[in-house]
Length: 179
Image (cartoon, one colour):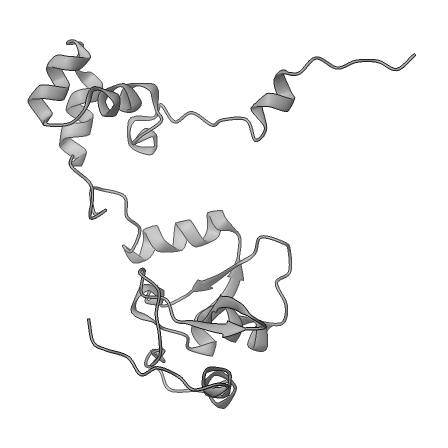
């Protein structure tokens, strides 16, 4: 990874404001500090914020709903893109769909920590042998096999995806009526 310049006070915000009308077709790459995922970051009001999100706010207005994500049309957010015309507000589902379309999601065994391939997961899902036998054969822990079978891991692939309740404790609590 190339070493990036350490920004002086106000330099990051100035860079963003200077590029609000950036019109080249090429991605505008953040020249300063980035996080571990490659996204530009800066300090604003004592908080660490993402550069592309700040640009999206300036160009597209404030987030239209509380958990809106600043999504990249170009699929190059992980490379530090913050081009004003490449950014839009999106839901988590829309942003995930965009990452899938761009091929930048970490599914399909692309995650750097993934130990299994799609074919191996499908084989595990179809195999009725004991958990510990499969774990040993595929070089993973028994929990990984159980999580695949239960849909907690790779559920999007196996069709066994389990959606947990948002607040399981509150859902399970009995409702007391007032007297």
